[in-house]
Image 1 (tube, helix red, strand yellow):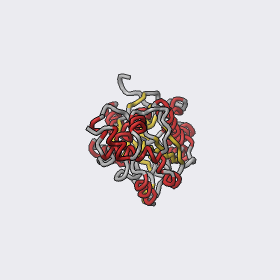
Image 2 (cartoon, one colour):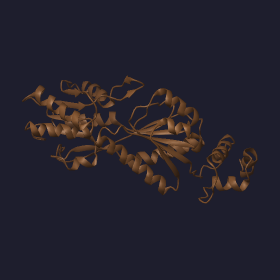
Image 3 (spheres, helix red, strand yellow):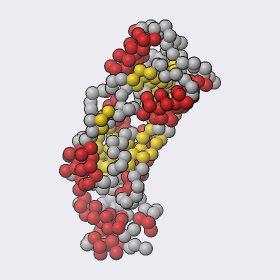
Image 4 (cartoon, rainbow, N blue to C red):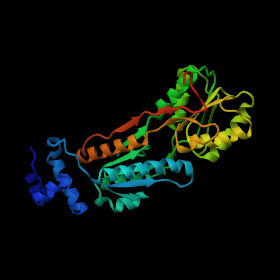
Amino acid sequence: MTTIKEIAQKSGYSPATVSRLLNNDPNLSITADTKNKILEIANKLGYWKDHQEKEIKPTIALLYRTNHKEQLQDEYFTSLKQALVETVKQKSMKMKTFYNVKDLIENASLFQGFIGVGAAPIENAELLELHKVLPNGVFVDTNPAPELFDSIRPNLSLTVKNAIDLFIKNDCKTIGFIGGVGPKHDHIQENDPRAVAFAEYMKVRNKDTNYMFVSGPFSVENGYELGKEVVKECEDNLPDAFLIASDTLSVGVLQAFNEENVNVPKDTAILSINNSNVVKYVSPPLSSYNINQQEMIDLALTMLTNLIIQPDRAHIDVNMNTDLVVRKSFVPKGE
């Protein structure tokens, strides 16, 4: 069994310092380099295998990336950030926020790991450089480099399948989809997983995909334009129901539908994804799949601390299920 004395001898620090660090003494004042070296030696000697009951409290960074172009989308990531800040505070951990990768790279030696929140693009070269200096990282909701870092994300593919099954169960014969394009990574346009899952699963359920409207960003303005396009293309033949890829788009779609005298849910029902605060106040209030942000943050921190004490383990990408919050835009039978 690895002892405190062995770690002290290998690291060059006193047994008292090592013991206080590994036992999370809140009054211990040491540099980040000292902390990193002691934890590195403890890892190499297999200390955590013999002391699995111990919980470490690393000093971490938050890499927070938003584009500040869409208020409702930013609200989602702001809420994730706030949940992380509060949870870190409750756990008596230390965290510093960075808004771009270069700054985090320059200060990487101060931290044992990082949490990534936000959807603004990151160049692949930056991610590779970040991994060199700070390999322990967990991205929440997105993962631009699953081969380099861990991630926890909502299971959007399963959410889409659940929505289609629910519509069919409620006698919806025709089902539409409204979505935006996926993110760009290293200048390559990716397909949004919600649109991909919709097209694939509709075929599995022997349903046509004639009512898919996918273009532009995940913004209220684009949702409005897509809503107008839907009315123009469908005229009096709207599908029985629409799944809309995000609440930001849904708010714009509802605005367009209201202007065109499309009654929701009488003329067409709507299911949305995210369950942001605003969906309770639009007309009609939106039935939306809830993404439990607190659970994602809790799991992200667990994954990060696990990665810090087991730096050689394989990276993992975890999908977390969503749950439907029913409101007036679509009320399933029996609700």
